[in-house]
Image (cartoon, rainbow, N blue to C red; front, top):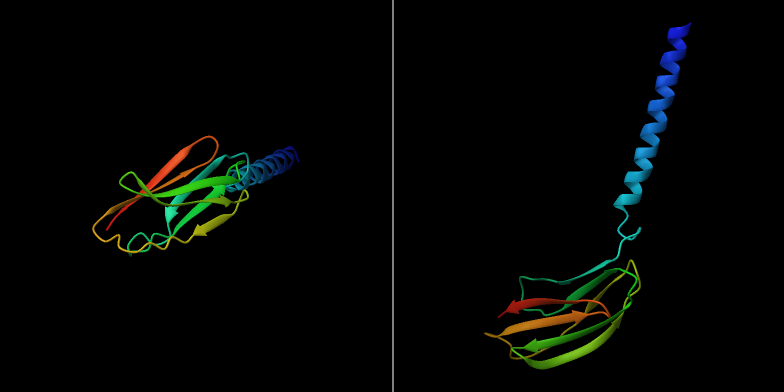
Length: 118
């Protein structure tokens, strides 16, 4: 009888432990739970399109972007992106073949840049 109680207590303890670990792992896998980050990337890095995407998982929701050729500003704009969302910014520029294009994106705290050489 004692052995059955010990086995039952051990099984209940393991079940509670596994349930807790599953709960914690699910929370950690959530991109927005207690996290503060954002990322920028080209929609298609292999073609000649300059369209880029801002994916926001931060408390900031206002982004300023600039398209530069060398240090000359070709285009700029603002993007309002809520936490957990992403927005693709279309960039339509002509005659950029053979040139290096820099896209600079900033919020109120940090700045990120991506580059494409044509």
